[in-house]
Image 1: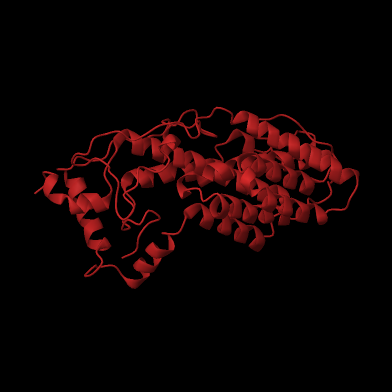
Image 2: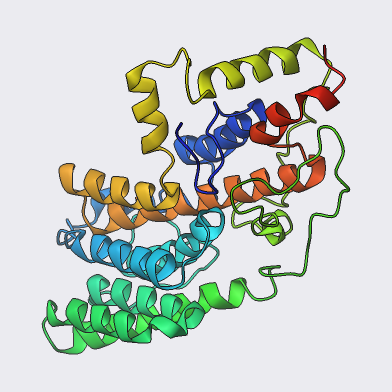
Length: 336
């Protein structure tokens, strides 16, 4: 049977999870973030055509480096990875857009030197953010930085780009001070029918409960879009969902198709790592320039970070048990 990243059997996403994902994806799809709207002025149409922006190679390079740092080196749980990628994505976006223009910055109103290298700025911003939060990966991060700058001609444009990228990163680091990361929050509801508890095989405490209280990147508060409570254990909705999960998730005798099993196995991998690969592939296939690639990355990761925060505040608030627990303790739920 396919399992998730915690080692528990996979099941179709609950209504809470589906609704939470809709929040994040709606923010992204509708562009409901003020900093991602066009900042063109009324005189832009009469201005001379600007030199084409550089390609997106530096954005993809640092996407790979970020995954190597957060996933491989730091071994951070998938639950929190979107937040770190969101910090880096926002800093890189501000560094690039502050020089190239086209869009408003994220919670910043500073423009860089007109002829500065946006590639150098992007590399400097990513380098500084990763080094700030993951100093243990300095060798890897410094090597990636050296490789990025080696692709850019030495000179004033590079120097100005580096300086502006450092400023962009410093702004994000400042914004995220005292945001609740790593706060000593625990899930303390006593075990009872319907209540979450550690699950096999690790039987570990809840992963990153502090995510439920961390300050979002786009939303006003962690509970701004928190969905309502899960259905009662004796309700028709719960009964239907329970039976679907048990039937589809069974190790043997399941009604799953081979394609559904393959799909479950595919999505049992760490999702933020898959998203990073997907963004790199999209950027390459569609030939995005550095501005569009930086915008795509920042919009994706800030929205995904907030969707994850929303999911965790929902998890901590309602404390619903996981399917593996519900199925194994079905004789305790009061549902005939």
